[in-house]
Image (cartoon, rainbow, N blue to C red):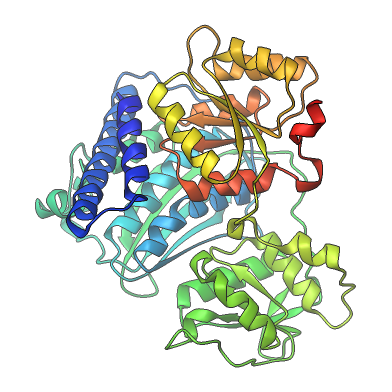
Length: 477
């Protein structure tokens, strides 16, 4: 059901990048939005049908709470920024990593945070994780989603977790929802012996959704705290963002105050989009990905660097350390700090093996890759992919998960058995969250969701191809 829809959405996206007059562009955008809405409904219906049938299995494994929460925020950030919203995440210092089914937790967080993005007209969404009691070996963890939307009336707080439930009947028409996303969350919460509640946000207008459950403690290395002894000042008018940043700083071992070693400045403080005057000798500017063109201006103005929202705790800590008076800064250090979400990249000459059995999906991916300057060879299934890998060198392989004769995970295992270390990126319809876990277990390096989007594709190319090690055409001669 999803494959033809992904093809429709992808080809409409390609069409929108061609020369169209005003009416044609409006028709194309309307068709694309309708197809995306239909795909969302199909995914919700399939998820709910599986839950009702009791077909879900839980596979507990160590879960890095920071990586999980960050991935959800970054996946939703383009949608949030498109609506001029901020989205952010934080994990409290005392919230330990846990044993859980990561794909199910991700689905809960994605549905809750996605719902917040949908219903919030202005302001922010904050995904936070806190410890809520329990024991040393069995901590109780709370996953909290705060938003600055209209809130949920008391009389609707039970109804929205029911099948096809809405706050009121106009919601379904205004927000293109089937009313199944929160019902899926409720079912998953019950399956994890947890609770899901909604109430008013304590610090102002909006709603707070809270999923809480008890988990076994995971034996993972403790999180780094490189900011011990350092103080950071935060300048922003967004109270939610300020709370998030303070949590990340404290989780990194630092403190927050006015007499600070380094100052973090939110570009959103600028009324007219111009650069904010340097408030301190050692300042770092906070930008959205779409504001990347301002980086050079801020560097000329004396800023020590930039951070991209939603902020990553480790990147924040590294940037702060580099900005301190006694930091040992080298060109290699600076390159290491560049954010991969800003990657434009020069991918000319990158050799790509594209493994995709669906002709429309293959055409879409091949067109996008060739527009980036890549040299693309195609294969229709795992057997053809293995044959191509035996006789050619590739910088990166994009591999469909589900194919006839030999699927993506099986082909990847065979590649690894052959000693191939080429990065393999799974292409998945994201029907079920366990697909992502399966691709990693098979030895794949990353995954992209269909229909492919150009920004996500560029980020994968930048992250997994190394300019100095590319398998250029000459390397095969």
